Image 1 (cartoon, rainbow, N blue to C red):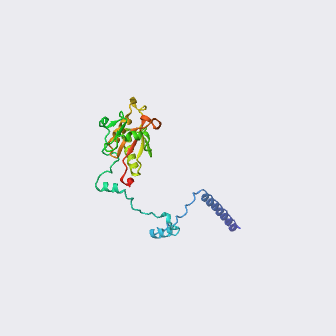
Image 2: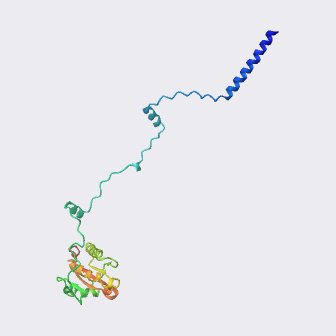
Length: 224
């Protein structure tokens, strides 16, 4: 009987010890999970090859091609100027803004006739013997711009066989001091242009004192 009592006491004590052990285990911080073994570094070439498997190659496209075209060739006159290291000639090269031309004018300073033309050319020009085939308006241009525009215009008319042109320079009412700057300059430029046979102040119905009728020399090709 005593032996069974001793055994029972031992069981109670063991049960108490197990309960205390559980309580201590519950209060103790959780243990960290064991770290996983680090993966071995992947070979760079193998990783690159694996990445390429997901790449879709682009289809060749005609529009994606770049055509390397040779640069455009300049005009012959410009090529010659470049070969000589010179700038291309301007239409107003050699034409100045100054110079006294009053002695070359006639009809009270309103007309001009070159020496190898008939004396009544300017008068016939004003009377409408030649009809203007082109017109240039210089209103609003500065002197340098007007000079280049006028002489370029004359060269183009000569190239197309146009003999008579009308040049509108204005009467000077809008100029500073109401001085007709372009009116006098236009006459100065035209006298220096060898292809100008004559000019005359236009009749009132065509601009009067604000315009000139200009007769250009007939080209050799147009005479044949």
